[in-house]
Amino acid sequence: MNVTAVHIAHMFIKDFVKSGDIVIDATAGNGNDTLFLSTLIGNSGTIISIDIQKEAINRTQQLIARHNPYSNVHYVCDSHEHIGKIAQDYQNQISCIVFNLGYLPGADNTVHITKKDSTLKALESSIQLLNNRGILCVIAYQGHIGGLEEYVAIEQFMQTLEPHIWHVIKSEAINQTNTAPIVLLASKRKY
Ligand SMILES: C[S@@+](CC[C@H](N)C(=O)[O-])C[C@H]1O[C@@H](n2cnc3c(N)ncnc32)[C@H](O)[C@@H]1O
Image 1 (cartoon, rainbow, N blue to C red):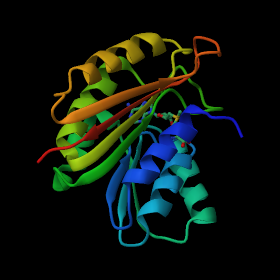
Image 2 (image 1 turned 90 degrees about the vertical axis):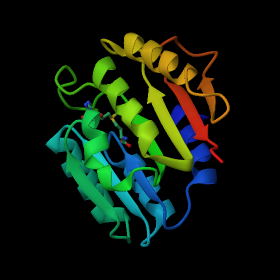
Image 3 (image 1 turned 135 degrees about the horizontal axis):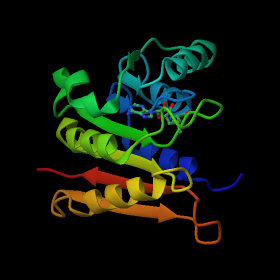
């Protein structure tokens, strides 16, 4: 098994997310991250799984139906830039929000690709939703159109998070192409 960006993100998430938590997958895609989170939180937890594309929501629902014994997933077909409104009942209650950026494999990637401005808006709202021990996990891809610009803006945003409250870590491959995905992880410690 190779150490991939998703593997690193999941290892990190696994240490923080527990049964009964409320979490968000901000880019449902094929549903792999939703399935992973849904299994961690169990029946007493809640996951909001968001994607701008109906096709992604369908794929995620199918994956969950095949592999998940729990009924803890709420599907929302909308842009994650509205995450604050989508999860307005859960202010300061979310333990983990995951953004696995880019486009849906096999779909028309020029239409529903994550974009700098909407991603930044979503990240700003996410900060408000996370509880005092919450984590934010972003997997950013530089290889697609606008990907580098999006990644640079995300990194700049995460660098500005209050250091007494947030610890922000970056993980990247150092022997792959310069388009290999980058993981940005932020954990909150507010007393
Ligand atoms: C790389 S895929 C996500 C992979 C997914 N987490 C998985 O485990 O399979 C990126 C997804 O982001 C979605 N997306 C693009 N722009 C979005 C937006 N503004 N709001 C929500 N989802 C968006 C795409 O439709 C696509 O399904």
